[in-house]
Length: 295
Image 1: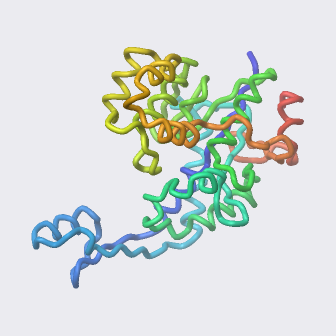
Image 2: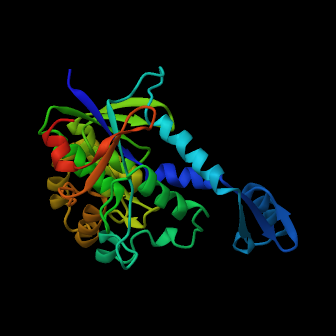
């Protein structure tokens, strides 16, 4: 049996840990509330718009954030029976370029526009740097972690290693193979059919969270119905038949934004392997050397 190497999308770990390490409260007029639900209910009760809710955060100690992060990282290394998930682990993070953007934001300035009003957890940047400095997190400036993980997973197919994709991001379900959802403690297999279905469905339906518009008038149900009739590998052919109702520019944009890239420039990227106890295995190595030597 070949050795397993786990590629961990650590962006969600950082966000979750930073969120745990802060206290939130919400202000409506002169009233303070500990939960957003209570603040919203108060707005409804007095006939006030939810836009009047002011959100504030008070940080706990940074070592609370570090402890939360390490705890979540451990959840990525053990299966639901307490056994090791893989023989080695690489943590991957998103790092913007010198302009503070990723390639998607350069290509499509309105990408994730709907998220920009949302306040980032206070310790998020600190934990990102902590992941890079203490755990040698792999990154390529200007590239998102999911593109890097996708590229690494596909490159691993050419060597005697079995990749395990560790994440809670639906976009990474475009990668065929073994997956581990650390939040639900669930392992599952993604077939090539499943992977292409996930990609095509997201392109057709769109993604409001990332401000990606699908085909006008289609929606979740329409995307599901179209793929049920055609199958994901024929979806583009089916769209061509309905060219009069399809907004092809919107489709092309969604396709570019949704599709996980397999060409992130990881060849000269240094990576650091970790074991189940989160202890480093040797010194940093080039990724191409690592997969070429099969650990």
